[in-house]
Length: 239
Ligand SMILES: [Zn+2]
Image (cartoon, rainbow, N blue to C red):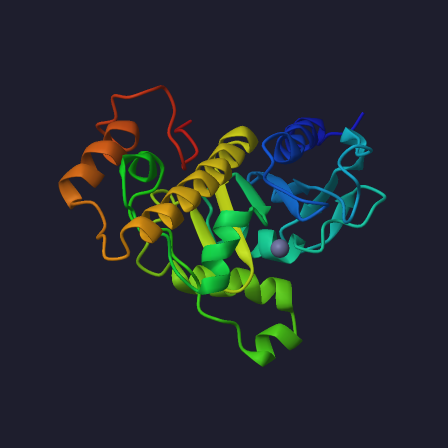
């Protein structure tokens, strides 16, 4: 039996949530689950139809990029996931989708401003958008460099407080302490993107909510004085 059975099972189940939540079209999406202690992560295989995918198909890759278990090729986005796991050591699960409303903001090169409490319950402020990638970054190590522009954008932002990003001209990545939670964050991102888009149509001059309301909603669910619900949103729980 595989010694990576648990992360493969969690990875498989989280990947199946993407079509269930209508977060993906065709095969544009993937979830990975890390075991930081062992320096590996499980990820969806490349280009496999969700309806035919099996748990055994999940590919286990180490943080240096070597496949340690699996007969299929890992997702073509694997270097992005690897780059993020190396930099964001508190993140255990990463989700990439091309969900349509989040992609619309990414393609417009616009961050998603925090316009209401639905957003504030999940993300502590705007969901940032990266800069455009250079021809050199696109030409060599494109997927790895996609991770690098995300990390560059998060200078000064805590990935435990804003657990999603938009890659310019591409789409969203979201993360969390488990596969289910990371997919929930990707779904929340898509919902708040749709809400923000419609809000900006109705009132293009609207500003972000005030810090007092942002703090109230985010901090009651996350952080040291959280009192709402049971689980942290972005971070791996202690212990
Ligand atoms: Zn993509």
